[in-house]
Image 1: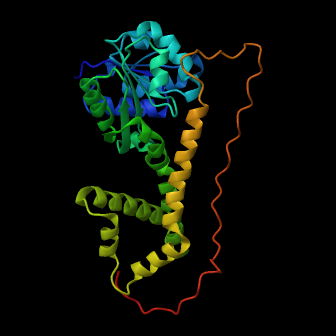
Image 2 (image 1 turned 180 degrees about the vertical axis):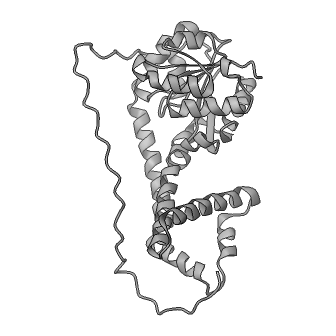
Image 3 (image 1 turned 180 degrees about the horizontal axis):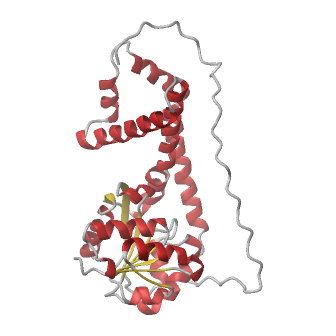
Length: 321
């Protein structure tokens, strides 16, 4: 398996995370991993070459011609042009073409490539950067059981992996794709609570992050329903159940359910707006002015406002957790 040749079209964070996992797990040797990207992103290729020992190029066709598996890690709007470029290098035998692009369907990928090309959609999330990703994949029409087994092994190298039907991918986007951002908000808020009660910021943040990681590990390791695990922490009349009531009053459950629903709906809408990949996208005109880069929005921590509308409760005697 270490002789497996893997090529990345695009060399950003996700490509680097996958390459790191594949190499560290022994699925591929560094010299058998190749990545390409435009000359304007040369610094990304340098990172892959220096930190992982991968081969690099600016020629996408070179990657496809020298790979058993190609992973397309580019923005959805340019996947069509990339697949058209790869078309002469793709046969039913090789390579297996996979894509992480949001909203680019299996049918549109197959339409852009030669008949009987083997394609997959894969969806890792950003914790793949630390080998704790929650990934899924879905098969195209002409893929084999061996392709599915290989994809499972590749994504398992950077975390957990499941095979799903393509119709699940928008929901997966709203849950595990966007989910890390929701969890970062929770960690930040828990840490803010610790700071409000007098803890140093660094300690509060470590405690909050480790608490979330430990709770997640409990769910995965024990197989118990999260509600049961929650009940096991809440002693009758104790501190924890009083904190849980505050979260229930604030609508935490409803907010998270609505966040997944809204993000999934947005993913579905964005997928419908993607250009058909069976036709190449026109490259930008050399005379056109480059777009003005968007300015990053500075991070602002939301101020703490006491919930005045919340009914005041009489002080409770101290009780164990």
